[in-house]
Length: 423
Ligand SMILES: *Cc1c(COP(=O)(O)O)cnc(C)c1O
Ligand SMILES: [Zn+2]
Image (cartoon, rainbow, N blue to C red; front, side):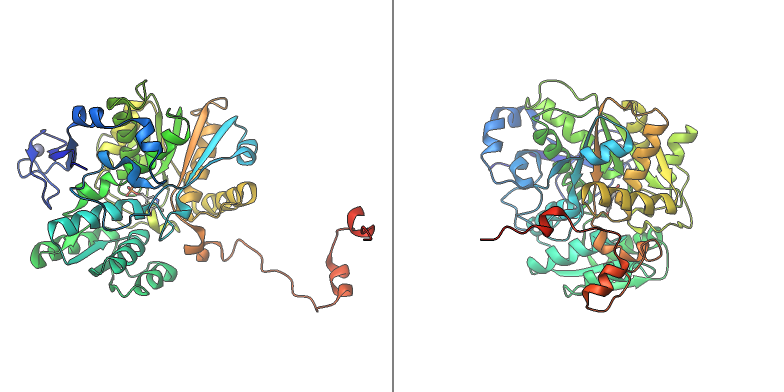
């Protein structure tokens, strides 16, 4: 398999850099993005070829930036696109889908996609020690995938992170560094560490490769819809990379001839009101976001006050005719339960943000009720149980007797139970 990536291109001035562990342009500090030889890919890729491969993210490997076979996370991706009819009824819309990365392998969030690319690339570059700054899910994924690959890992997190996300990182033998500060302060520290120690940080010097992994989320949506694009996508935003890469994925599928029509999908970004720099920029018509100094929300996985791709995410929402909205903590909790009760899907707080924002956008009339919508569920509810602590009642305890059960149940026996078939 040839490597179709040609280098890293500055998103501001277009200057091309060689494939290396760098993430910004030395001329203008613009972020770098992987560029490909698309005409060569067009010659090499067909729907048929892709469909014959195993159902994981690497079936789109021509559009991912590796030189060799993936050595980290070869089974990541291939998560279900669920037709969500019961949630559609509850929201009063006709065609609704859920892309469910709450069941991504191995750490139950979409971050396994970005980490498998970043760490496979880190190994190609020869790094033995890797790390990240994380709001939780990235920590879990770098620790797990790093352990499986035999890499030494250093994971930096804000010290007020959910306990389950810290435990779910330490268990893999990672060096976990809890920092008393916000994510943005943690990230700044990691930039210094990466520079001083020469390690590979997946979301810093490996970020251009890392971010490409998110495209697979978009490739899978389009393929599972029958090689076409939905009219609306609602996507949670932290650093603002995923939303942009889903759209880049759609554009690439069109560019290499796998989907005939260019995407006209409207991109909607979702954040928590307690940390909403990107949606605030969209709503107030500001081109550049104002950093949120002290994020304050139960949705810690999205709590990045100064998002690296905030400018591009806001621009994308404007350019595609989408919008950005944010929701309060009580709305997040209610939406987690709505999704669980209608679809049997337990999402983390970021999923609550997505569902609650979708509800809001539908009520505002920004998403028409008769058009097709895909909601991006990116993380698993079992990792953020604390958020539901006060919202869910603990079950009543009864004695182990039928009388005790009769006393509390409002149900009456069903006819089937009363007339058992005698054999
Ligand atoms: C990291 C994360 C996101 C957002 O990712 P960005 O690409 O940084 O915008 C969304 N959902 C969950 C659960 C995450 O962990
Ligand atoms: Zn530049």
